[in-house]
Length: 61
Picture 1 (cartoon, rainbow, N blue to C red):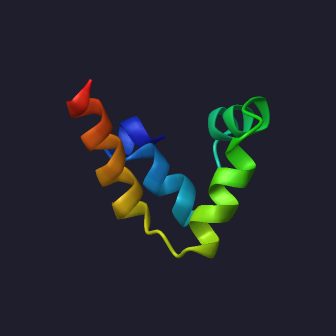
Picture 2 (cartoon, rainbow, N blue to C red; picture 1 turned 30 degrees about the vertical axis):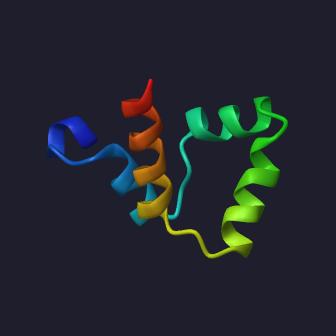
């Protein structure tokens, strides 16, 4: 549907209050991910900041 609407899949899922099964499966398969997300929430780290850190890590590699 996102492709037909020419919209971002993740944004549509968020608007619907849903999380894709791909994301859910990744979180479940990664033992440290729940703790990482919990700490990010507790420290009020924004999605924008996390994305910025990912981009920096990608650039450093």
